[in-house]
Every structure is written in C-alpha cells, then in structure tokens.
Length: 314
Image 1 (spheres, rainbow, N blue to C red):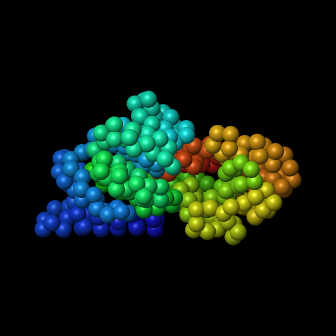
Image 2 (image 1 turned 45 degrees about the vertical axis):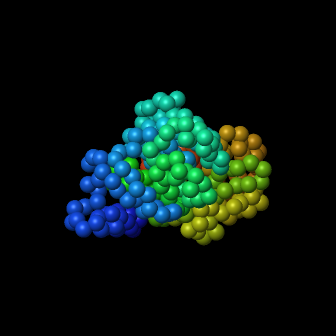
Image 3 (image 1 turned 180 degrees about the vertical axis):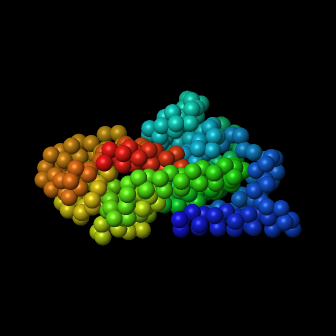
C-alpha cells in the first residue's frame, strides 16, 4: 500500500541521516543497547542516550504508541477512558501512570517531579512549551496529528530505540487490514461516513485526513463526495445530515456526556431515519475511546477489531 511504502522510505531516510558520522553501519543498531542517537523531529534534533526508562507522554497518540511497544510511561496527561483501555489491552496497571495535567494544560511541575529521561508529544499541542519541556528531559515532538499516526509511531519508536519492533507492529496492522478488506468483499465499492456527536448542534464527520479515516481508507473504503477530503473532518449540523449519502455510517455519541442527549433525540426523527445507510440497516454505533482517542497502533487495532465483528455480522 502507498502509505506503507512511504513509511518504509521514511525509516530508510532516518537511517541515512543518523548514520552520517562516517560509518556504514545502519542507524537502527542504536536500539540494540546503550548508545547515543540523534532524533530529528518537528522542532529540531534531540540527542537521546541509552534506553529511556522514565517516559512521560503528553498526548493520546504518544500514550498509545509507547504502550503498544511495551513501555509503561511514568506519567501521562488525562486522556479520558483511553488509559484504562490501553491498560486492559496491554496488561499493565493504569494506577502506575501518574496523571500530569491535561493535554491542553500539562502540569510541568508534576512532569519535573517524575524525573523523566524522555518526553514525547507533538507540536500541534505543545510547540510553545518545547523549551520548557526540553529543560526537563530530551523532548521529541511530532509535527502533525491524524492520518500521520504511523509516521508518529515510528518517530516515537526511534526515540525509544525500538524501531524494529514498531515495524513489526505496522506489518501486522497491514496484514489485518488486508484480511478485513478481503472479508468485506469489495470495500472500494462501499462509501462510509464516520459521525461523532459533540454536543449542542455540532456533529463531526471524520474524513480521510483523520486517524480513523486513515484506518478505513487503508481497508479500502471510500467516502461520499460531500465528505471526501484529506482534511481531518467536515463539520455538520442536524440540518446538513443529508450530506451523509454513504452506504454505511459509523457513529459515536461522543465521550462522556458529550452529545449523547442530542444523538438520542436526533435519531428518533426523520433527519436521521431518512439517511440511506440508516434505512438500509447499515448504521453502527462505535465506542468513542476506541475509535477517536487512541491515535496509534492500539487504537487502530481496536477499530479493526470492531470492523471485523461488523463484517462478520453482515
């Protein structure tokens, strides 16, 4: 697949960059044991020595990435139900992870108290804090969010010295994507929509530029013209729901209280019941934390689990 080819090219390029010190040995050798490596990221180059043991993550994608690699961070920001989901999936105690504020406002004093040897986050959230974070520990920041989750995962793995393991995880993801697409039959002939009720009159229709959109696109699904964009999402209201002309709709009432009340009310009315996928019985409620909070390989795997179950019930 095109995205997988591009990812392999990125890894190869990273090996060339980090191997420019006059040796022909491949850069990933740094993951075999203690050593120093230069990690190029959105905000510069960070030097990391040895194997980080006290990792702090400041967004949900980084939390997903490190736990997928078998690393339990000493600290993480509040991410709703995601930490518990990841703990159950990977078999660690969520209570071992200290909460260090929120994604919007990480508690830097709490981070410092944990004495981290690596901080992972992204420039979308915390570019302005980079200097302060770097004063606490080597800090690596990804550039973007959403459909680039695989690139971000490889960046986090490079910082941890675990690139080889990350490649194995992505290869397994690619295999599962192929299996689910084949089981569906012809996903390219199926248009999908992914709706998340946010409360009030706000409904998000996630597109190909989003995390969950990239997973569905990898499986092979397409989008109706009005919702087909490489942006993260299209903003809808109840009155513009008629743009959902897809064959299938996946929907979530949102995290916590979120849009639960509005979604229940809306679904009893004609604006919802008249939608083509609803009339065809192809509307599927999905778990918010599984589809929208992970932003990494575990979250992608949970989406694939749900797709496999839906595919088997068709």
